[in-house]
Image (cartoon, rainbow, N blue to C red; front, side, top):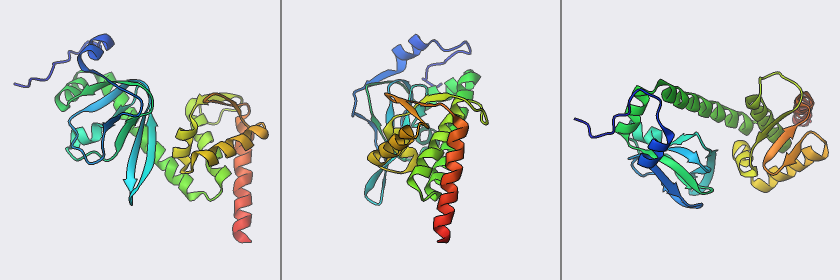
Length: 228
């Protein structure tokens, strides 16, 4: 018989789960390393985690995960080594789940399983967005495109008016494949043009349609440069 805890079909109690599976990581602490075998997956309760991968000897940021996100599940479920390194960006509290416990949680709690499936779909969407951004040649176009994608996630696509969301300069730089300083300059230009308002790490787009029009104009300018 399996020694894994049997999680009953009633909704999981957060305090009970944290008491049994909770683990804390200090800011800067490595949660797992690329190439390690995966014995656990982690469901973030508090804090932010950065995923990085070595490409041709250089470290490349993949994404930043927040509370509610899961990491490490692919290596755990498939048995392959970790494909990236996870580092706590801030103090992190996460549930550390071994394979049997995760499987029990998925089998007995459909809402948890649905949440994880939605997260995996979101990651695929983010990967597609990053590929689209890589195909853009203009820095401002890359940043505006990423902001439009984030805005569409924050509210129904096609809506006008004001929309706001939280994103750090590092998260935005990861999305567009540019260094943080370049992203900050691009955001400042958008602020100067009154396309954005910024408060700490929260961005507000007062007129989403205006930002869409700017993106279209940037695309036209890029086409003209390409024909020149």
